[in-house]
Length: 352
Image (cartoon, rainbow, N blue to C red; front, side, top):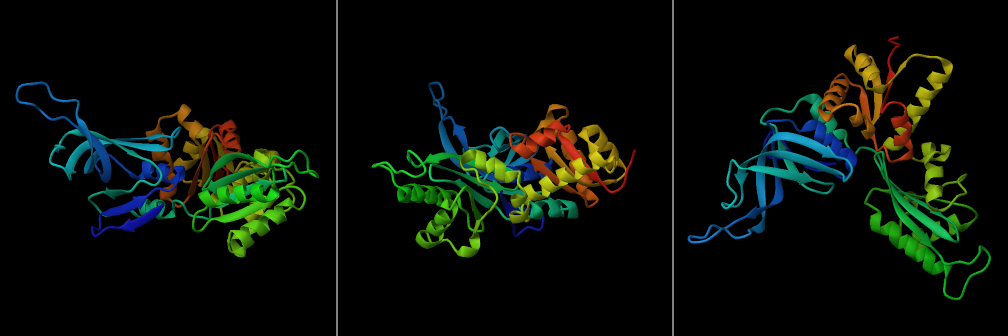
C-alpha cells in the first residue's frame, strides 16, 4: 500500500496494491468517514419540451460520506456506498447517493475528520509490508510464472517451448525463443522491489537465470536459483510454495510467515498442547481475554459470519498488539485455513 499524509492532519492519500490492501481498507473505513476518489457518473440533461436524454457518463472527483462499505473478494474490489458531499462538476449534485468501486491501483483519500488512532495508523502503514516475489518454474518444455504479493498468488498460464523431447529440438522451436518469451512475461509483472526465484529440473533453471541477468539486465542480487524443487509448470509453483526452500528464500514474505504459523499450530495439535484456537467462536473467546498472539483467516470465514462481525474481531485483536493475516481460500495455504474453520490463532497461553 502506498500511503501519504495530506495537508490535513485527519486524512491520508492511499493506493492499494493488492487484495490484502483492500481488506485493510475495509477494516479502516467506517461509517461517517469521507472518501475522495475519481469516479464516473451518468448525467441526464433535462429538455424543456421532451423527455430527458439517456445521459452521458462523465468523469468526476467526488467526496463521499460513507454509509456502508463491503468487500467483493471474488473480483478484488471494495465497494463504498454513501452520499456525495463535494463534487468537481456542478452537474453532479451534492446529497445524491453514489457507489465508489476501489480496485488495486486506484487512488483514494480517506478523511476521518479526527486524529487517527494508533491502531489505525499501524494497520495502514504495515499493510503491504514485506518483499514480493516472482516465481519461475521452468524446464526445456514448459514454464509457469507467478507473482506472490502478501499472501496472494497470481499464476500466469503455462508457456510452452514446442520441444518434442528433452534431448531433441524441432525445426520451428528454439530454447532461445522460449527463454526470451518467458523472460518477457517475468518483466511484464515485475515491480520495482520484487525478487525473482527460478527453479525446476536439471540445468535449465541456471541457463534461464543467465538469460535474466545477462540479456535482460536484471541485477544478480534480485534473482535467485532455488534447489530441491525439480518440477516445472504450474505444478512446480505449488510444490515450491509447500517446500522448505520457500520458507528459507521467502522468509520476509507474509506467505512464509503464515505457513510457519500453520505448521506451529499443527505441531501443537500433534503434541496435545492447547495454545491455539480454531474457528470464529474459539478465536473470539480467546480474543475476549486478550490471549491471541497471531491469527490467520481465510475469506471462507464470511460463510459463517458477516463482514462487520469479523472486522470488529480482527480490529480488537490488533488493538492490543496481536498480528492478523488474511489468506485467499483459493490458494493452497488458504484451503488449509478454510479446512480448520476459516480462522486459526496462536495463543499466548492455553485457555482451555
